[in-house]
Length: 403
Image (cartoon, rainbow, N blue to C red; front, side):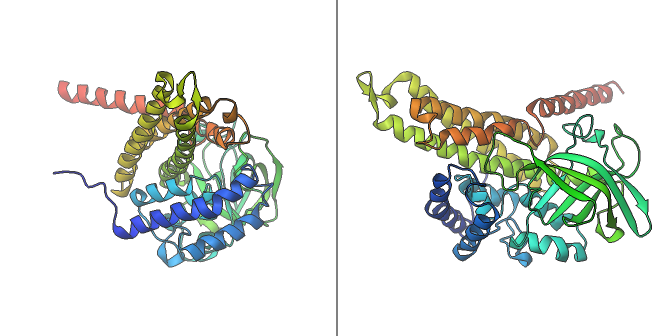
């Protein structure tokens, strides 16, 4: 029996509308500001583009229907997010960019009814932005979340949080934070973390400097954030105390895949530009696209695009079935992060001098996709996890065979 990889007619229409909106409305804005969202106006631009996305019927495809979204499954999100990602500003316009998209997903699954009204509803509508505060300076939590040092101490009717975070995406201008803090154990312990919800104007929360990074299209920057006796009431504990690491998995696997979706769109744009260039430019007595070395780069791009989509499809299928899909998402994320960079890099090479100039968007696409090999788990960490699971399964099989 054949596997059905088609989409319902309503999803196909949403894909088409998203493609048209992104290319006709969003791309010209991105090009005008060379992909720098701060130069483009930051939150003012976000509000304007999101209003246009609502008018076009493409806003918040991932958010629950009761909060104004389309309620798409992970599998149905993939082609829609890819079309939005064709522009660096597309995810902002459709309210499906990081970290808000992942936070909407997690709040929809974990938050209490009261927390959904206070935090999820305005986030899904685009009334506010959010930030997920986990990463810390060394020796704190980074690729190894168990190194978490930010601490929450129980006090009367709530908790006081103290710690130092950095590389917190979207922190500047966020309406609220989801804070990961240690409530038991010590750094290095695999458990003992809790998630807390805190409005950004909570006393004791200070957003510090923007950390300069390669990418320029992430609204709110990547900031240091300080927590000094920041009080969070008991009703703003997200989920159960000491279960934060387990809840994080609700967010991390899907968020890795939605990153793949968005960056696949960006890499496809790079490939489209390069193919159009080599199909018409002449050199060495022929169209560049008729030369063997250029044809190899075109073919390799096509292979990387197809392989990324296939791994993404498998991972989303497993997530939609209700599993953690840890291995599938690790494999898809690792391959995609590297393949997407290869696609953009080859596209630059095919376009020569134009490829590294501001006359084409390829250079800025390269600067935006390169960090993906680091965030949401570096490739090395995912490879370690994949190998550990594979070897662990082999050891268990040997023990069972010998028993």
